[in-house]
Amino acid sequence: MNELLGFEASKSGEMYNDLATVFMRARQRAVKLTQQYNRLYGEDEEKRMAVLNDLLGSVGETIFFEPDFRCEFGKNIHIGDRFYANFDCILLDGGEIFIGDDVLFGPRVGIFTTNHAIDATEQAAGGCYSKNVTIGDDVWLGANVTINQGVTIGKNTIVGSGSVVTKSLPESVIAVGNPCRVLREITEKIKRTTFSARSNFLNGFEQTLVPFYGKLTFEWSGDQWQITVIRLTKIGHMKRLRR
Ligand SMILES: CC(=O)SCCNC(=O)CCNC(=O)[C@H](O)C(C)(C)COP(=O)(O)OP(=O)(O)OC[C@H]1O[C@@H](n2cnc3c(N)ncnc32)[C@H](O)[C@@H]1OP(=O)(O)O
Image (cartoon, rainbow, N blue to C red; front, top):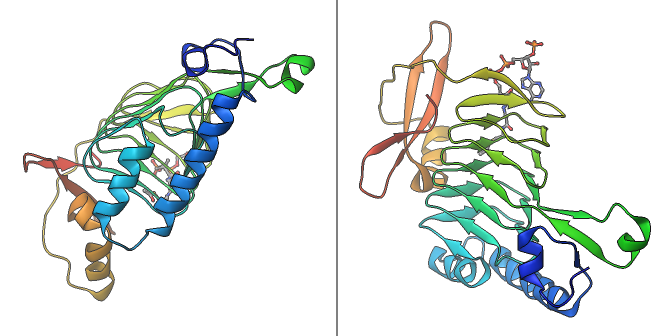
């Protein structure tokens, strides 16, 4: 076990002592900052972003976690632009977590980069090893998705609710289940009509979510309306959430 290298060991996949002082202190700091972030819910978003800037390794523009967000260290988490996570997101970042642009997490998504040692003696002594996780641009993780260490999710992929992802997934697929397997590719082209939402429900939706996302579109598929969110990129171009 490598106690001297601290985060260098954890980020490189070597076995490290999870109970070493450097990790204990960093964990306490992260808990305090995430509590502060969660308490600031509903306050000025700039204050919340300032906490995230302090807590996380790097953040893009417009990052939003519903309460309660929790992470282990924070400094190993890197998030791109326009990120939204629903309630109770847990990111255990002994290894690094890289999240791209325009990523959506459903409620109770968990990313776990660290395993305890397999050997019981090393386990009891605090032995752990971590592997980085990467989430590509335009990915949507459904509710209760679990991502295990070492996984990469290709861009534009959707992971169904309750899935446990143990191996990497390619780009532009829908994948589901435990263990998570590809269900189908995302190939279809959907024609959309954009118009303003006017019902109470949709006005409420616009006020709460659309500032983070962009615009709503509606498509009549023959027997039902499909509501889709189109997000505005930094340079103002429309970006489709689902194709
Ligand atoms: C940002 C937010 O807050 S998100 C809000 C939270 N919402 C969610 O988490 C919902 C996530 N959505 C899902 O899980 C959806 O099922 C999707 C998007 C993965 C798939 O939707 P569709 O493409 O319409 O798949 P469809 O419903 O046709 O199902 C196809 C097959 O996959 C199975 N399946 C679908 N979803 C799942 C799942 N999550 N886990 C296991 N199997 C599934 C279906 O049972 C079906 O199996 P069958 O062919 O044997 O009958």
